[in-house]
Image (cartoon, rainbow, N blue to C red; front, side, top):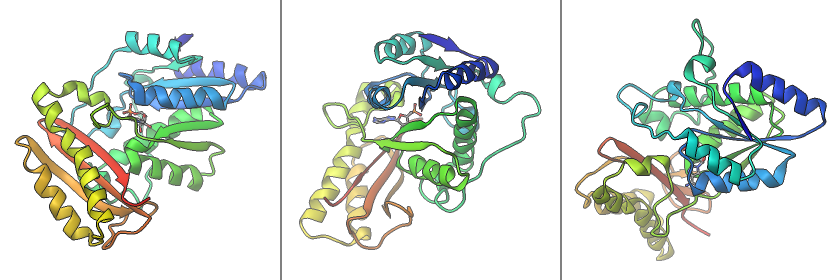
Length: 281
Ligand code: AMP
């Protein structure tokens, strides 16, 4: 397994693969791989001839004052994990390679980008869609695999892929969790032991919401109020949002049904964590 850093070299590799009649599966990441990423790679290994892992901490999806600098990076360890996971090629460009001087083109998906992370991170999905579109153009995958952990991101990428007629099968994979319920995230490493413990409040809120729904509660506002109360018992938690939305439109719902997804974003110091899950079924 090799690592390619230049767009040009990646395109040559892709051309050779296509000429040889191979299908390509892409797993886009920002690196610092954990079991969640590895579950995507495992699925990818099953789906195509060649498996490409992209690793790029994309500056355009981070806002002012967000954790771009603090985002953990370890290409050496990622390469070892990728090799063990059966990755055929790592694409790990630097920012100047993806956004050279004079770069001026961005992809904006409307509608489903306005709520949730779109509201609290202006420009975030513009950055995500731009970089994912560029990765799709460079790597020309037949299949691309994403995690449900970033529920809104997956919905936005499905929308973009469909709207722009990209011939790519988008696959969503379940959230991989630590044994105690915390959703795996590269950012978890930036939590102190104390805050790592407090961060369990997210998955616990999900469980609490499911219990409330199972007990017959259907009023979204009332459920959210209870969850806010629970999370606010954690001294360092600063809630960004707790919302119950329709799984497809990502619009807020008044009452719970089979399409209801609870989505949470909570800051612990400078680390912002997200989680989500369906409330019924
Ligand atoms: P990231 O490197 O955090 O940008 O994530 C790269 C891909 O891995 C995205 O499609 C994420 O949704 C997915 N991912 C991240 N964490 C998890 C997890 N805990 N379980 C499953 N997929 C995940």
